[in-house]
Amino acid sequence: MSNKQNDMSFLNHLEILRWTLVRSSMAIFFFGIIAFFFKDFIFNQIILAPKDPSFFTYRFLCSISQSLGTNGLCIDEIPFIVQSRTMAGQFSAHIWTSIAVGFILAFPFIIWEIWKFISPGLYDKEKKNTRLFIFISSMLFFIGILFGYYIITPLSINFLGSYRVAAEVNNNIDLSSYTGLLKASCLSSGFIFELPIVIYFLTKMGLVTPEFLKEYRKYALVLVLILAAIITPPDIISQVIVAIPMMILYELSIKISKYVLKKEKKEKEEKEKEMKKNNKPVKRTRKPIQD
Image (tube, rainbow, N blue to C red; front, side, top):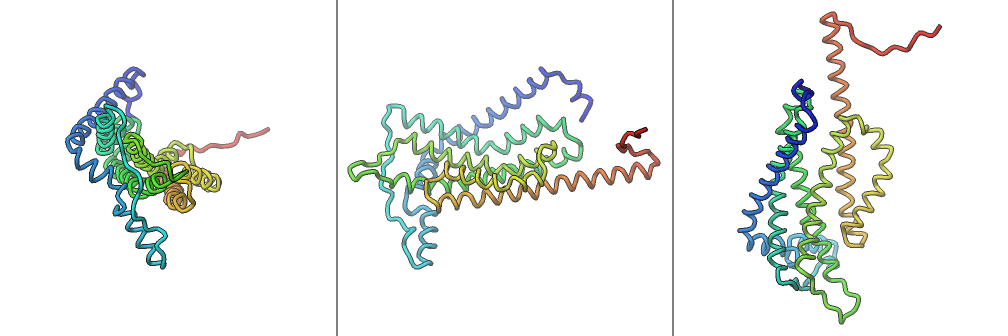
């Protein structure tokens, strides 16, 4: 950590944080404007696509079902219509959807801004990993977005859009409800897929260890199942499909935590060897001598 960083006051940190948020907001606004002018493509080809029975996920599940000798996972229609019941409903959905798309597109820049904010408190070796950090964080986020869009969203739309308590009750889904489900599914998945990054920093801070993660694995499994039940339709198949990648991420986080501690141990040993080589005393903790 540099001396300049140590000398900075709390107000200076707040000022840097303020400009970090301002630049991030401007990036979201910039990409949001671009998304606003691509309304037809975003709504027809992306937002409303999971409502079409010919959507990729439905065709893929149907092919799996047919390979098993059944048509149980094949669907011919999703019996509901999307409607707007308020005067500004469609315009409001257009605005908020553009902002959400702007946030997704600006995510690498936002991560870069966050890294710049915390980098003065890092060592020089850690600062060299800037590009790798931004790339991995962005990749995990975009994979999570795709997982939410191609897995969670179509499963939820198919189940909730087809569910009926009585034949006389029709499903006429409000546009804000439909887009809200899609945005929540995608963004929540994107943030969940950032778990390895979170574990990396928690391990660096000494708050998490691989032994801790292993010890509480069974509790993590229960938490994952609960989370899967919240963000997916209430059926076992959907919950299992969502829970599997979450547990894979958890196991990956354990590996990352091991790697961080192993790397720190190696660096410490190399530092001790270098100090011995230069005939410098190595500080070691000793137990007090008792009389």
